[in-house]
Image 1 (cartoon, rainbow, N blue to C red):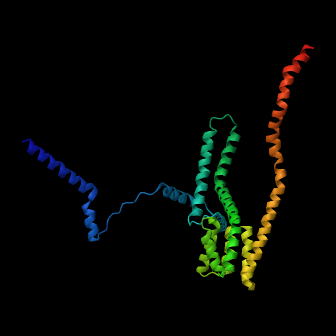
Image 2 (cartoon, rainbow, N blue to C red):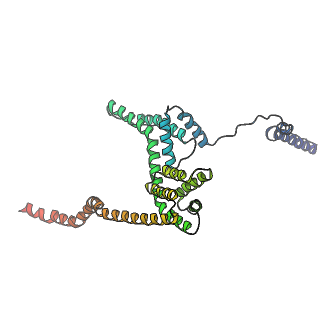
Image 3 (tube, helix red, strand yellow):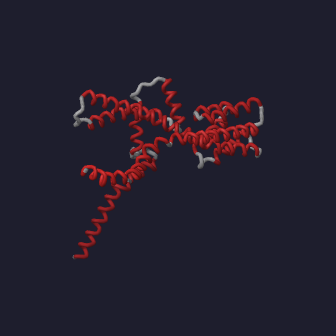
Length: 305
């Protein structure tokens, strides 16, 4: 009898587990529908929180009315900052809307229990709203400025490598492609821009137009000078290698002059750190013991007299 009960319990548990598994996990009806080719009600895959945030910012970005002129200006700034996503402009506008609402709320919470005047509180809230609205623009501006400095820093190496490539027998287009490959890890910003030039050339654009687009995208003065040299050499038929070599020498002399100028300014710039940081500690070390000695010995002697 116990054996029969055990077998019956085992069969019941096994059948129940198989039924639950078939209903919840295996789902044979969906497999049959998939084999038959019938429509299957697809479940929505859960989105990553970053994608949900991006979709929310895109919806918020549609709330700001903008003119085509402003759109073109902001797109140019985003491209100069290295942000080339097609949704970047809407995300930027969405950030401006969200921060313009979020910053005043945080400011209201912070100054709710303070004893300031209502006028100062209103001014602080308005200032926080302005900071939230214009903050993303300043962020893009700083990012673009940082990227321009990185491009100018890597331009010397890129120009030397281009000179070597052209003098070794490569054409200008192949030299640009070679520079983009070689500097991919050392200077990714300028490598990305040169790769974009190569893609534009493959798409059928004229070389002069692709080079001018390079200068317009980066807005770096040294790179614009290089673009002007290449365009003029291509237009008048002069030797590319000779032009690049002359421009490389010019940039090397200019870089040396900039370093000498910074070194000459260093003495003036050190006046304020020395005056406010080093001299007070020097006075404490040199004059401090004498002041203590005067306080302990000379002042009691004068009082006794």
